[in-house]
Image (cartoon, rainbow, N blue to C red):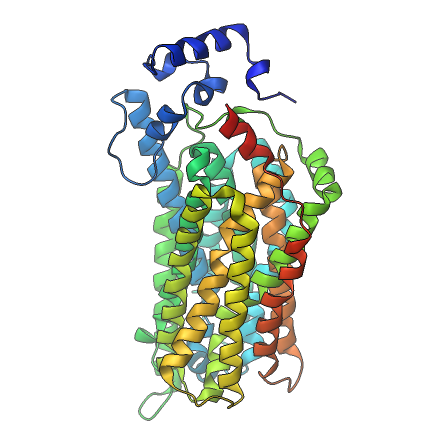
Length: 486
């Protein structure tokens, strides 16, 4: 494997680097720079080539402009793909009352299982998909995911007759789960390929935030699908639901076309030293992860703290119903929670980019804040505190925002700890861990007469226990130290 320090640069690269610094940073056009070492020449110039926030200050070089354009296209399409995936994954929870009335047998267990297929398929296919992406490139994986989403959404539009409607809805959920293996694991790889070290966590946070925004779209579904009530027949509800599914299929088709035509591969100009260095192959990478005790602790902490909250979003209505909040009002609670949890990762990511050595402290603070918010909701659920709407909104939104803000920090820390393991493999393992815990959370709904009281206890404990794991993690910044030292 290639070493990535100044001492191991070729003589020409060393000579070019020293000339660049001694000349006050006046660099020739990017094409004149040996590609593996462009970022080692100038940290100041690095942020000009691929800056995410704002286009001002970019160099006039045609190569630099092309890099910036492809950067924006890759991030936009990746974010749009993830946003739509979440909309499709969370189709049924926000309209649970309507689908239960329109299609007999669609109770909480069926709704939970359609969401659970995404978690199960992710765990099953994450290994093969990460291996294929490492061999064939990110573009091939994103295109494959978009194809699976388009096929799945088309299948569930074919009929409204039972039981075929249920079968095709479950099949669509399975295909979406397979597609999610790359969509969820890709952000750290895109950040490594396209962004300099001081912006990587923010880039992951923005992509994760867009993923959460997809739930806003799903929680707005009651605008299309009516609530059961006087004057609303079963046929009316079925027509509304099918109209929603046609809209989903149309958006999936348009996104597939955009990904096929526009999604780029790697940039011509590497944004950092480590982005141009070789990574371990798949099997050695897996073995290195298994032997890394700190990474295993990170996986356990992430799975316990993030998984249950992510799964809860898809069945939030069932926790709000005992408080007297029905589908129409629950929609706005979900929107508030999702919007807050879409913005919070960006702030957390930006903070971590400025203070990367405080990542463990930041994670612990976020987990404790989430535990406090969910404990507040627990007190409301058990009648210890009088139920008021503002308390429901703040407790749910606060818990979700704090938990989701930790996601980009977990990814950045995991990749740093395991370098030079490929980013796609590490992020795949991290995401698989939360999918396992999310799946276990949703499987509990299949227990007869289990009720919903256990949910709040689970959320509080899931945010509290990982603090103990984080305290014993040996934090190392292997990748960041190389990038920041050159």
